[in-house]
Amino acid sequence: MVTLIGAAGWAGPFVQTPNAGGSGYAVEHVSVRADDRVTTATLYLPEGDEQVPGVVFGAGSGTAPALYTNYGAALATNGFTVLVAGQTRELEAGRPIYWEMRRDTSDIFESAADDYANWAAYLASHPRVDEDRLVFGGHSGGANSAYRVAYRRPEVDGVVAIAGRFPPETDDPFPTNLLLATGSEDSLVPPSKLANVSAELTGTALKPGQQVGSFADGTATRVTVAEGATHLSESDNPELVRETTDWALRSVGESPPATLGISVRSIGSVLTQFLFGLVGVLAATALAKRGLTGRLDDRQRRDGLVALAWLAGFAVVLHTTVSQRVYHVGPTPEQTVKYVLLGGLVLGIGLLLDRAASALSWDDSRSVSTLLDLGFLFVPAGAFVLVSTQFVTFQLVTTVVLSSVVLAVLTAVLAELAVLKVERRIRWSAVGVAALWLLPAVVPPYL
Image 1: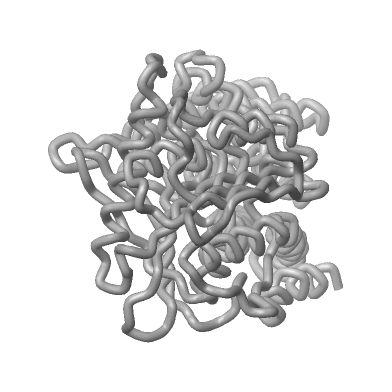
Image 2: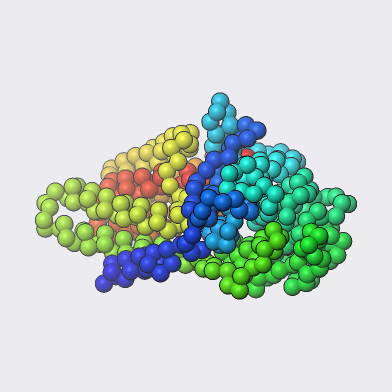
C-alpha cells in the first residue's frame, strides 16, 4: 500500500500538470560562449518560425535555469523567445573550469554584467528574435546585472528586476521601463529596500503597488510585493510570474490578454513529488528484500540486488523531479578532481571503519552499528566540504546547506538498509556510490 501511495504521489503531477506554462513552445539547452567564458542556459521557443520579442532572464547567483522554469514557460506561452541563463564558467584550453575559487569580489558586479551583456547579444542575434524588441529580467544576482546592462543598452524596452538590491551607482535616470519586485517575507531584499532602489534609479521612492510614468516613452516604473514570498520562493511565485509576463508584454507594446494562460508549478510541489517517490522507493526496497528472502540463499547476492533496486528507483525519482525542475543533482564527470577527492575519502574512511568493526565486532550492537553508518557517511562528506570550500565563509555556508539536504536523504536510506539487515559492506557501497554521485554536484563552482 505504501509503495502504491508513493508511486501515485510521484506520478500524479505528470498527468495533471505536465508543463509549467502550458503548451505551445519548445525547450532547448544551450551554451553561450563569449570572452573565454561559457554559460549554461535554457532557451524557450514559441511555436512557429516568425520573429518574436525576446527576454533575457538571469538566474540568481549559484542557481540553475531549471529553478526558473515557470518564468521561461509563461513568457514563451505568451509569445516571447526566452533565454534563462545560469552559471558562467571560465574557459581554459577551450574547456570550462568547474572548480575555481575567487576571493577578490571587487569586480564581481562588472564581471557578471559582462556575462549578461553576452547573453543579450546571443539572444538578439537569434533568428527567432526581433532584436528591436528586447526585455531584460532576472532574480537576485541576475536582477543586479539586468540594471547595469540596461544602461549599456538603453534601447532595451523594459527591465524586470526581482529582488535586485544592488543597482549601479549613477546619477543618470534609468533608461527604460522598470518593474521592481520582491516578496513580503524576503529578508535579503525587503519591500523597504525597493523604495530605496526606485529612488536611486528614478528619483522617486515608490511604495508597494505604486506605478508612475508611461510605457509609451519608456518611463513606466512600478513596485510589486508578492505576499508571503521569500527570497527562494520568488522563483516560483505565481504573482511574480504573472507580473513579469504582463510587464514584458506592455514594454514591447502589446496588450496583455485577459488571461495569460499561465500555470505555475511551485518548488514545494516538486519536493512533495520527490518525497512521495522516495517513500515509494523505500517501501519497494523493503518488498524486494521480502520477495528475495527464501528465493535466494546467497545473502550477498540477495542484498546486492536489494541495494541495486533502491539505487535504480532513487535515480528515476530524483531525475524526474528535483533535477528536472529545481537544480540538477547528478553525475558531472567533467569535475574529475572532485570525484577523485571524494572517492578517495569515502574509500579510505570506509575501509578503516570496516576493518575496525570487523576486528572488534562493534557492529553486533545496533547503536554502535548506527554510529558506524553515520561515521561512514558524514566524516568523508564533511572533509570533502571543508577542503572543497577552503574554509571561505560564504562558500562554506552555501555548501553546508546544500550538502546537508543530500546527507539527510542518504541517512534515511542508510537507516532503512540497516533495518532490512542488508550486509554492512553492501549498504555502504550503495550509499557511497550515491554520495559520490550527488555531493560533487551541489558544491557550487565559485567563479
